[in-house]
Length: 131
Length: 131
DNA sequence: CGGTATCCCTAAGGATACTG
DNA sequence: CAGTATCCTTAGGGATACCG
Image (tube, rainbow over all chains, first blue to last red; front, side):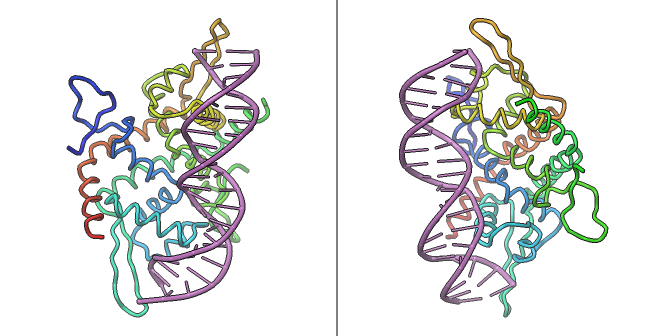
């Protein structure tokens, strides 16, 4: 069974729960939450990218971390990887249908945060001043 | 100015951009993305919690990490903290209006991932088998 | 109850070098 | 171009103990 519940009990609910310690959805949420995964998904939400183009788009990421992040996302079924064996080789990354849905929601979150920058900055200043 | 753009240029856009290295929105997205922050926000989306109740809801979190996480979220203006000085003391945590908006979007992401568990599990099995 | 302080260890992740 | 491999440093985060 691929589902999971949060509380052990006599009549377990057979639905996934991000609060459940070993649930796939909780793991996936963590995979998506890392800074590089977030940005990679947002970038791929704009369209397909080749490795180094994606690396330029996600400013500050190292080759190692981008590669590692993409492997995780591919394993989770969020990103597809297509190799075109030319010389020099080219590898095209894109979102799967599920990846598109994830990226869309991530975009809404990013939009909200971008709009809220003044509010967040004010909150931080107030908090730091109060200390 | 509390906004930020991603590309330096002669006519900088005065809008926030999560891709920009030093942008507040990028930092905030990271703060929200950590596993404990995600779960704390999702929990508080269900209603207010006292410290230890929240700790029970977010299974697996240590006192230290929950405390640290809540401080970060409070500083970002996503969570409010109210102390009622009784004996024993009680501290009530809740979402701010901005926190509510963030939590709502996080919930949509979590719902999607919970629904997609079978799909993700299948993708992982396929990926691992292919290695 | 609701934390903070300390110790300690693992793992994230950057820099660099090398390969198909 | 698109990575992998190695090294090395830092910081995330658990365990424990203690305080208002």
